[in-house]
Image (cartoon, rainbow, N blue to C red; front, side, top):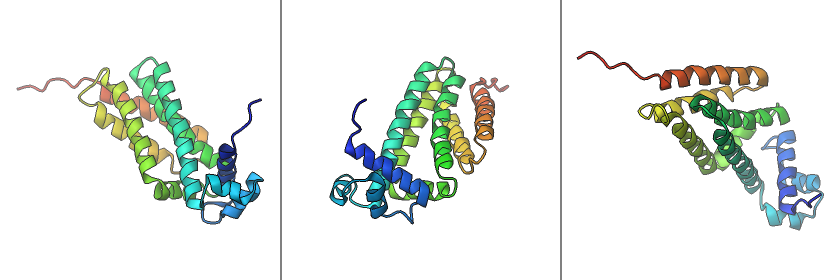
Length: 190
């Protein structure tokens, strides 16, 4: 079994602390204790609680970005590609709600406050994947439909206590929105 790099162990410990205690109540001392490493070692990888949350967010979004690209490439139809990409996005939030039901919203707010550029870049990458998938058959509406789909998915992420319902709502919403976006509008009479 390959040895886990210390930096990854520190980030995993930080995530567990944030999930258990919330962002506001977590301290670097909590992360040190959870990682079972010396304070200087933890500070080597995360110099502060703010830096820890940024690195945790960066790591999670990099994994999600890769998973979204892989899922889109594996899907066949534009609708399947859209559902695959947004499914990855939703699962990131579901994991957070599962791991930290009491602090999920606080952690999402902290991630947005501490790492806004990471969140923006991630959403922009997803928008590009969605636009590319939809542009295969509806280039005129692809960008706007991608924006609507991302907004719809973000709405589902606000309360994920029932992940099964959120997954079903995502599938139904994607089906409805993509079919509307992919329908070619009839030429209007002159």
